[in-house]
Length: 161
Image 1 (cartoon, rainbow, N blue to C red):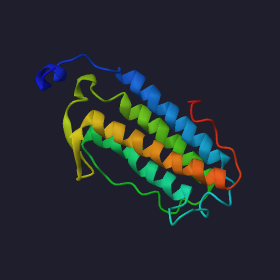
Image 2 (cartoon, one colour):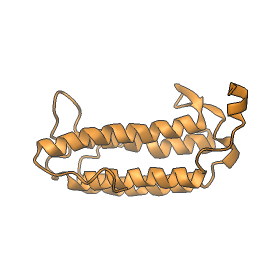
Image 3 (cartoon, rainbow, N blue to C red):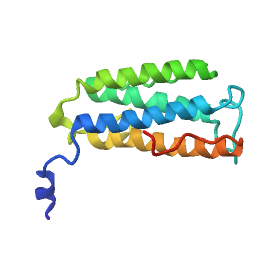
């Protein structure tokens, strides 16, 4: 199949289904955050990696701001400075998920192939930007799973999204 032919092929996944998929991952990551002991979320790490709380802060700095940029073209960087408690992180996580839903409803259905430069440095189609945000969350959640296991805590089943 030629590149031109594949560019014209039907959509693999409907936008609403992709959002539902992402929200499933966000719900699972939220349950992972909940599983951390309050005193370990921002203190425990292994092998020189960041704490899972710091990783979750990074996820907050990517997800909703990514959608905001895709919708508005405004690529303001967001840094959840000073977030260092599970309660505050969960509150911001829920707010971020609501923002994702709001911005998602504003994404043009035919715009997923449009090329954009996210945060002034990552150039690729809209669908690639969204998949990056999802993949990054999965990657860091995997690190969180290792941390919980090292702490003797069973993480939530990864397949329960």
